[in-house]
Image (cartoon, rainbow, N blue to C red; front, side, top):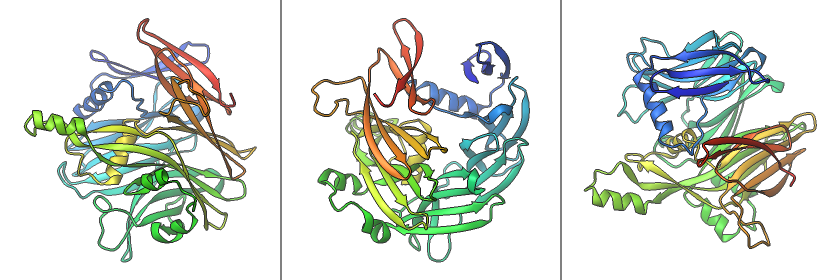
Length: 422
């Protein structure tokens, strides 16, 4: 399914078969102001890939839109292979709350959605929910609020459906009593396993200064130690190996003063649209747990840092809010994870701005970092990629990536497979 935007005709979701023949389309001509705002935000950053539609197996696709109810809301819509609506699931039309959503992942069985709700745009307090939708019928199977207890509070970083275990795994940060998820630094991470009806199956907590500290590599370089200071961690993927062990693949990020933002604020007498704070996206992190869920390893995988400019007003935002923004605009260096469950081998691909290969003076247009989780063991490598234009990296068949290149001069789009073993 391809998504096209035209100012006159709106959004077209076009389904193409393998021979290149159009099978049907779904058109959104009358766009709500919120959806128009979302699209304009995407168009302002053409180098960033923003995904809001996913395949759900043989039955078709699922898409996310922002809608204008009494307040800002969201719409999750299932489409068949002709572009016809299968089902709709979203925020109630009469909701008195602002409701936003993000599709975390989707397949032929389930669509997992992260929902945020608050009373007003300027309200800092928000409630967050994990929502599981049946991809075949559009029925909500459960919508659980992330709630704390007397000992700690929680926020969510990511969630994944584990079909083989018939459960949903939620990964997030935990906070000390009295601390607020949208304000204070986290005290650690948790892993929660839910039944398919939303009831809790298992809950595990790991604190930065206790369990996690014990397994961190004692030979950490000074650069790695520096990347740890005052940085937060976003979890991109959970990998479950055949032996029941778990690997979390994450990426570090933290706030940094923005020279351009400060200069802009001075020149515009404080009315700049850019924040005086940037975000530094730092190293990849792999955290591993045994089948008994005891933490057994914590590895920092070095890559060159990248800088993300923030809009005005984001400088005081808490880490979970910043992570959601960075993910929404596609500014993390993580690209995707592909896997072959039969062989118990998974590949995590990310982009590395360090374009030099080891022991080489030559630079490449792009370096891809590759982390292979093979039977629970981690292997690391870097792959050079050269291109004549703007590059996007997408998942392909196991062992490959698809490189999409936009050639500005000829206004052409090229796609090719790149072997990760090269």
